[in-house]
Image 1 (cartoon, rainbow, N blue to C red):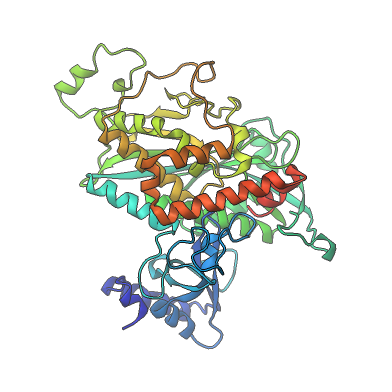
Image 2: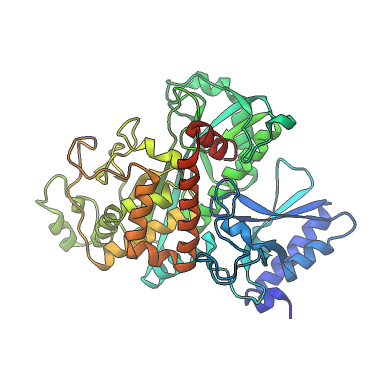
Length: 497
């Protein structure tokens, strides 16, 4: 019995997908195949299988997986391991980990694609398993899959559309001299592509045609539903907007986009960064705006609005102008209320870097407090659209967030609002007014809120919660000890993300 069969994932459909991969490898003269997995930070890790003489390494990987050191699940943003893995039972080490033991990456043949920027290179997404064939629970993608299973059992699904802000710079010096070696490394020296402060400027878009062409070609070749590329407000800042799809696919697409455009642009002499605020004077912080709609699992109908019928219409009449019930039905209103109640704990999952928290200061259309508004870009949650297009835009996230954990947090919070039949407060028309409960001012505050939330902790599961908190607390401790905080953030985030 193969390892894939022992894991319980190999069936007729997977066997056919494996055959299709091997056929493509042979027909397209593929020289190598990357087997990749998204870590806690949403960065791809993996190994490259060499097909120099035949496809047997790919066949072997599809049947038996690829070995991977377990400490890759325990790394902070500098690649330091957050647990004492060589001390038996040391410091809250999750079960199944220790002594830098091996895990097994099992590829999903249905995810196979050809990398458009790397000729002769195929790619497959993989999931980590213990060597006894049991799943690794401290895996972000599995966390989202578990959340979606709970949501499905309640009769619902989730559709998501992504709006991702990011920066692109021209590399002027690589800084790869021996004297530059550091842990983490110093990022390259860069120059702006456009001076900013002309939102949606056609002139700046034309000036940046070469890198934007690379982004467009890369995204489309990866099969991503890219709808627009835009000039954002800040210097060298851009935004990519994607069509909506199911939540798991949207998270996969975010990982592919973020990692793919970085690699493709780097080959052309550009540095793409998804850090919230790049390390230069005048930088404008980037957000990740998550549009999402609750849908009925049986037929995909939008479940956010009032149910059709005279009763629903009557119930909506005479309500105060700011009432969520003008636009949302029971499910939508309770979901919205759950997001508001859990916003502070969700911040740690949606904005997991030290760098992100300067954004919540009520400027440049970023949220400041846990409020909602009807088509109000200053509010944390923006209720927008109608009918089949009715949705909530959550503006809490930063583009560095792990998309699996960020989207899963919406589900846990929303389901709690539905279970407790919570009602949202009136919509705000003054999102920056004094008096509202402010969002966390630091990552430390957000982590405390996450730790205090039984709903979010239960959603993460004990192993994932252990890993996430340990890694982020280590990250905070190293930041606090840094003699030069700006240098620390530049190397920690800007150079690697």
